[in-house]
Image: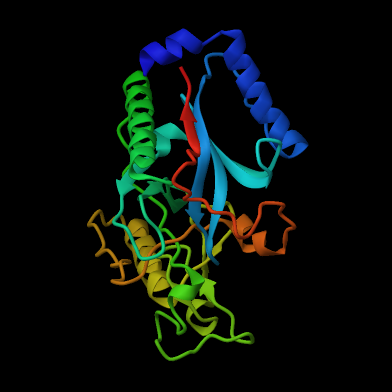
Amino acid sequence: MKEMVDHLVNTEINSQRIASVENCFGASGQPLAVPGRVLLGEGILTKECRKKPKPRVFFLFNDILVYGSIVINKRKYNSQHIIPLEDVTLETLPDTLQMKNRWMIKTSKKSFVVSAASLTERKEWLSHLEECIRHLLTKTGRQPSTEHAAPWIPDKATDICMRCTQTKFSTLTRRHHCRKCGFVVCADCSRQRFLMPRLSPKPLRVCSLCYRQLMAEKKKEAEGDQRQPEQIDSSMAGYEPSSGDDSDKSDDDKVERWPADAEFYASEVSWSSFHS
C-alpha cells in the first residue's frame, strides 16, 4: 500500500481522478484534493440503511473514506459523507438471506453495514481498508479506536417497540431510534434527550433504559467515582444493524435516477476497482 501511495502521489493521473470525484459531487460536496492524498479505489457497495438496503458509491483514499448517493452513475452523486480512516474499525459479518459479503464500518460518530457484490470484492475492500488504517495509525502513533457509535436496527426488523415490547408500530405510531443503543423504540420509551458530544453538539433522543444509565454515569463522574458502570447489552439476536444516517431517512423522497430493479449482483459485473 505504501508503495502504491508513493507511486501515485503528486502524479497527474491521481489529480485527475480526485478532480473527477469532486466534479461528480459538484457544489454539494467538499474539496477532496489536499497534498499527499491519493485515491486508491472506488466502487458501488450496498449500504444497509434505516428503511432498506441501497446502492452507494464509495471512494477509498489513503486517509479518508468518502461515500454518497448515486444520481447518475459515474456522473452525478450527492449526500457526500467523509470518514477519517484513523477513526475506523472493521468487523466482518455473516451472510443473511437478503445480504451477502457483509461487513460493518464502525466509527465513534456512526456505524453501518455494507455488502459487496462478491466475496473476492469484500476481501479486496477489507484488505485495502485495513492496510490504510494500519499505516495511518503507525504514522500518527494513535491507538485503534475503541469507542464506536451503535448501529441502528432497521425499521422493518421489528413491528413493536424493542424496550416496552407493548407498543405496535403503524402509520400513526412512528418508529424512533435510540442514539445510544440503536434500538427501534416508541415515543413513550424515548422521550428523553441526552447530550453526547462525541455524536452531536445537540442533545439526542435516547431510550429510557439508556437515559437511566447515562444519568448514572454522569452522577458518578460528578462524584469523582472512577468505577466503570455496567454496560447495557445493545445486541439483539435476530436483528441486523443499519445505518444511523439522518440523510437516509429522506432518501425515499428523493428522485434518484438509479433503476430500482437494477441487478447489483450480476455475475459478470465488477463494481469495484483499485488503482495502481
